[in-house]
Every structure is written in structure tokens, then in C-alpha cells.
Image 1 (tube, each protein chain N blue to C red):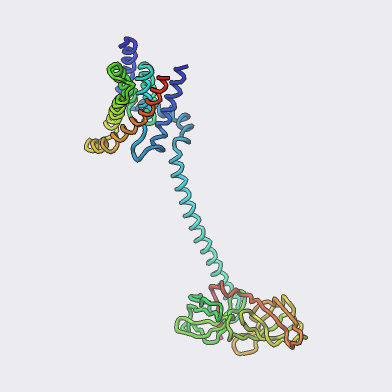
Image 2 (cartoon, one colour):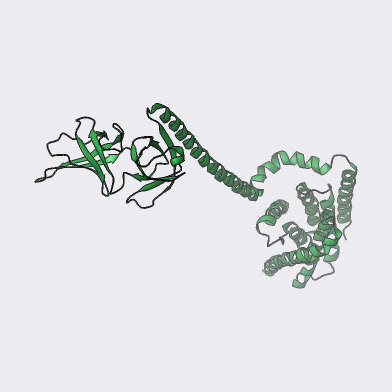
Length: 155
Length: 250
């Protein structure tokens, strides 16, 4: 049952990530549902699920992006692996653990820029105008999700 | 860390890396192949939802195109109308026995009272003062003033205008005048004049030749105690819409 739920949520996150960038973006800052899903699945559900989700979503994700095949599975599985390494060392039910989500979004965004942007001098400009606001926005959404996770856990 | 977890990660890592390396060296990108495989059905199916913004833009572009085409069509219709008018002018010129000078109306007075036109022909083209002016359907007025290249036409819609007309059916004659509406003066009550009768110029007077179409009788009333008939007329030519007139050489 959990597997089906994971597949459903993964596909939902995938389609949202394709749509949200156009419709719910604030300027050029948009939500990253795939990364949020990856983060919460790995840390709060099961690291193995995070790994599998990251691998398959990575394949789906890059169908729509002009990158070499295997780029996004590599990034997402590595992110899931790194998160699972850190999992035991942090208090994941504290809100300040969301700094990890902030860093994850920032890291993935940075890798995306390195892959997609040719001119290195514009990277710093993109970091400050695009990546950091994006990481803040995703952390804010993560805050809401964590609030519900905590509430559900107490019940 | 679980050993199984590490193994799975390494497996995924190796698969991804090998795909990445293979794709980097391959002539045809594996991603492109996958994309073309998926895109045929999968992407097309969802593109309706995913590309609604593009559709919106396309819709706007098409609306703009429709507006442009509609504008062009209007111009085309206008040109078609003008072409038809010019053809009629040529036909009219050949059919009319006397020498006529076609002229375009350059300006017209805005008020309905004492309506007059300025045309683009003058004495240099042979237009003389008091020459009769007609349209495609009937009489319009006469030349009031002449310049070298322009002339002023006094239309029928003028307090000073008076034309001798004749009923084509009964031969009754009268004077066509205008006072906010066209009416015929000087027709006695016993005269046989009916609604729907056509009127032509009678040829009396020095301005208009005989037989030019004038208009149609729209109202006939016998007033008690009055000697004359009350007759209203609608001219054949719509004086407010006319663009081209013909001046008859004297």
C-alpha cells in the first residue's frame, strides 16, 4: 500500500514540478516538489524509498530537460544518499533541521546551473537572485509539511 | 548504515554514471531517443495540460491575425466598392448622350440645411456656372461657383433650389423645392398625381435639360379649403452618401 502511495505522490510531485514552474512561480522563483518529496521521503519515511524515488523521478525529470541521460538520477540518488547519511546526526523533528532542505535545494539548483549555464560570471548573479530565494520558498513549504508531520506524530 | 542500502545506492550510481558516460560519447543522445519514444504518446497526451500557456499565446497571436485579416478584408471591400463605382462611371459616361464630366466630391457642408459640395473639377476641365449636376440615380443640383480646379455645387437640399419637374405617368408639372423636406409646389387639387409616381425634369428653365430623373412621390394630401395639393417627394439620389457626381456640359 505504501509503495502505491509513494508512486502516486512521486508522479504528483513530478507533474506539479512541470506545471508549477509556469503557474505558481513568483517571478523566476519556483517550488521544487520533487526535491521536497525526496527530502521528506528520505528523512521522515525510509531512506531506501528516497533512493528509489530519486532514481526513477530523475529519469522522468530529464525527459523534459536537455541534459545527458543519467544526470538527474545521479544527482537525486546522491542527494538521497547524503541525506540518509546525515539523518542520524540531526534532530530531524526540529524546525531548524530545515536548514538541510535549504542546503539541498541550493545544492541541486547549483548543480543545475553548472549543467545548464555556460557563462560562469552569471552564476553568482543567479545564486543571489534565483537560488537563495528559491531555497527560502521551498524551506517555507517544508516548514508547513514538517508542522503536519509533527502533529501527526504526536497524535 | 544498512549494507543493502549502500548496495542499492551503488547500483543506481553505477547505472546513472554509465548512462551518463554512454550518452556523452554517443552520436545520438540516449536522452533524445528516450524523449522521442516518450514524446510520441506520453508528452502529446499531457502537452495539452502542460502547454496551456503556449496555447494562450498562440490564441492571442491568432486573434491578432484575425484582426489584421479583418482589417485587410475591410480595405478589400472598400477597394471593390470603389472599383465598381469606377466601372459604373465609365459605363455611365458611354451611355449618356451629352458630354459629362465626372468629378469627385472633396468636401461637403456638415449641416443639412443648404447642403453643398466642393468637387475636384473646375473651369480648366470645362465646368461652367449653372451646369446641371447628376449622380448615378438622379439629379443632384447645379454648379454654383467655379474655380480653376474646383467648383461648388448647390444641391437640391437648398432653400433657393427650385426645379421644374414633370410626372412621368400623368404629365403634370410642378416646382420641386426643399424646406427641411422635398415638396412640389403649384399642383392644383384636381391634378392626377399619386403616391409612387416618378418625376423627371421638365426642361423648363435655363438650367436643367429635359428628362433627368428626379425622384418619387411619397405623400399626396388634399387639404380642405386649399387650392393646391400637398405633395412630398423622395429624390432618387441619396445626397448624403454620394461620392461621385457628373457635371453635364452645357
